Length: 67
Image 1 (cartoon, helix red, strand yellow):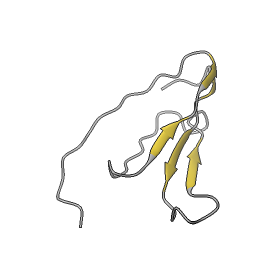
Image 2 (cartoon, rainbow, N blue to C red):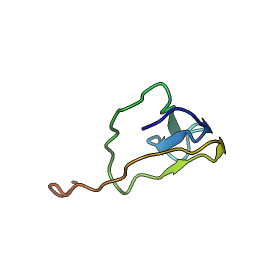
Image 3 (cartoon, rainbow, N blue to C red):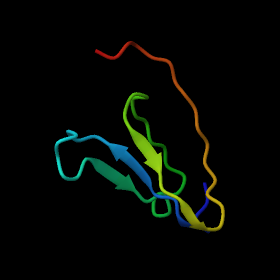
Image 4 (cartoon, helix red, strand yellow):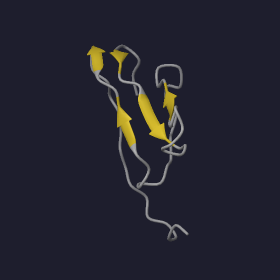
């Protein structure tokens, strides 16, 4: 929602745990006002914010069961 901070990148693990690089990093500063949907059982993290405040909105959506 904002871009006046440093750090705070979002990592989403989408590759096999045996891969050397298991995740994709999203830099929200270049994708301001975007939405990212993913299954709730995917491993994910937000890296520490180094300067400023990172603002975000989090929501859960109920849909058909994952198969």
